[in-house]
Amino acid sequence: MNAKLQSKAGRNAMLLAAFTLGAIAYASGLIEEILTHGPDIVYLAQQHMVLVAISGGLAILVGIPLGIWLSRPSMRGIAETAMQSLNVGTTVPTLAILALAMTILGIGILPAVFALWLASLLPIVRNTYQGLLSVPRHLIEAAHGMGMRPSQILWRVELPNALFVMFAGIRTALAINVGTAPLAFLIGGGGLGELIFTGIDLNETGMMLAGAIPTALLAVLVDYSTGIISYWLVPRGVNPLR
Amino acid sequence: MIKLENLTKIFETPSGPVTAADHVNMDVAEGEICVLLGPSGCGKTTTLKMINRLIQPTSGKIIINGKDTDAYDTVELRRTIGYVIQQIGLFPNMTVEENICVVPDLLGWDKVKSRKRAAELLETINLDPGTFLKRFPKELSGGQQQRVGVARALAADPPVMLMDEPFGAIDPINREVIQDEFLKIQKRLGKAVMFVSHDIDEAVKMAHKVAIFRGGKLEQFDSPDNVLAHPANSFIADFVGGDRTLKRLRLVTAGRALATGAPVVHAADSLDKAAGLMKEHGRETIVMVDQQGAPRGFVRLEIAQGRKGTVGEFHGALPATIGMQEDLRTAVSLMFMHDVSWLACVDADGAFRGYLTQRGITHLLGETYRPATQAAA
Image (cartoon, rainbow over all chains, first blue to last red; front, side, top):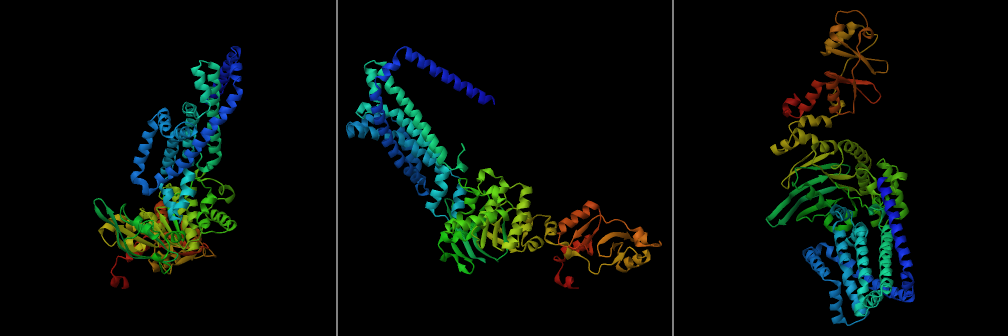
């Protein structure tokens, strides 16, 4: 009851703050300034989302099978080592990866997609791997004992029970991806970074915000929709939210 | 039904080979429950898991239904063997119905048929299908989950059931209930059951045969009564406990310990007649029955002696009666509760069948310890 009241009060305060900020922005003419970039925002946001969709999609396509593969009993010897090297991989700043990618792949969309793919790969692999490892051993033993084949155990027992953790990884990865994508502009990958960085360079707050605010909104939107998908896709019996 | 021949498992460990099962020979018939007992690490679970090849035997044969299981594909073999584990192992992502239908689905049964089967099985284990079919395991209590676990193992009607401490994680009250339910189901279905336990009381209650393991060796394979009465060595004697003869009480029905030719009197009989009968049979008391033969009371010798009157005027009330089919444990418990040395034993219709005395019980239980010649004499 108390917590409910508190969260309600918190939401009201946030709404009020947003409204106040909006009012101030309007009064200072900032909103008008941002809106003059309207067509650019739409075009660049699309480019931004294409970058996210390609790199994020590829990260999912590669990360999940990789996580599954590393979690197989036959991989036990090298799985931890592989996870550690992936961990080290994430500590390399994305900006450095972009620079490295540019030296090898040149400029444009390709190195940008590669760098974003690499940045979002790890959370997906790690959560897939950990999620599968945390499926209780006795479930797998029961499945073996009942006569399931290894592939049936993977599809019917292991993946459904790991799905919630896997989705958490995908969610994190996509949030990182949307937030990092503006850097793609620096190596000619396009996206909302174009408005942000140009705005900074020209000291034009309106232009900068025209890139930053849609980026933030996109990040929230992607996170929210991944959450919704995970809510409905993860079976009720193993979904703590349902 | 299940036959193990020289079944051996040697695990290679860093500290050298460990023999987990050493030339185990066993034989469990249809309708029988065989309980594998022993301290942890004795090889009972290894032996069980070799039967469905969760552990690959090092050597020896497993014959099910007259067929060497080496001839089967491992996965096909497992689908014909019911398997219940202590952690229950219901799949949390599946509903109760889907869990029960796992093996039927693997066998490619028609969906309508397997779903109908799931509902039937829930009835069998006393869970209402309407309420429980669509529930998820997390929405069931521990006892309900283990019932569903048993139902799931029974789903494809396998002739053989392997149960690895199936009721070990359930509270004592629920455990008794589920054990009784399982015995009832088993009586009807007549599976060959191998059952791992570390609880001697559970073994005595459930088993037709008990196999006691130590260090991978099968130390004794016998009926529960023989294991309790004649432990093969001091290890087994210790394992089954110093009160092992008391445990045998559970294995014998009251009907078996009755004295034959029990005298009775009716309400209209004279006390003289009652006293005469008691003297003739060397008894201190005699039961009074009604026209239907049901016990209505009893008369003591000291009251009947030297008094005039009928039994009906001087009888006392019986503190308790015991059914022929009830076990001696219940009988002795009743005797202790009412501070009496005998009970009137009645059949299913309530008719008096004889006197169950403490002497009769000790005599029956002691019979097995007397040398054969003496018992014959």
